[in-house]
Image (cartoon, rainbow, N blue to C red):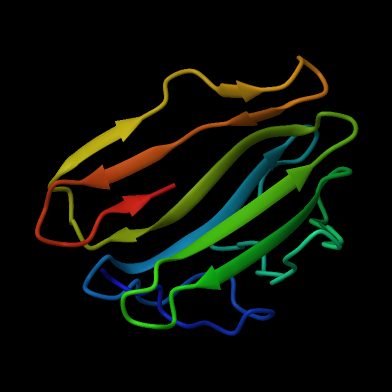
Amino acid sequence: GTRLQSYRARSDALIQDGGGDMFDWGNGLNLKTEPGGWRGAGSYLTYTQDCGASAAPQPTGQADVQYATCKFGGETPGVPGAFAAIFVSPSFAIRGLRIEGNLGADTWGTVSASAEPLAVGDEGSGMTFHYKSVHGTSDPSVNH
């Protein structure tokens, strides 16, 4: 398997190389809120590396939205890693999330994604998920 490339957990806003040409740069988190719209081009949220049950979300600077990110594992060959982000908005100000970058697949391969949200829990008190996968090339897959 391909390792997640190391990054400075509390200062980076994107990953320069996903390893094995997974992507040339990627994982830039761009948030859309109401009011406010999208963050400026290339103005990505900085990774917080705030993992565990005591994670304390940080302000995004957009409406009342707070967030936390965590990268775990992936530093040791053969041990999978993952990157997670959580966003919270008491006023439901979140209108969109883009995970931006330049994939190593370079327009080749197949895209699979959820057309409808995957919901867990009761409406209004649960969580909503979406997924997207780019796969089917000689480069490693990218799964969000």
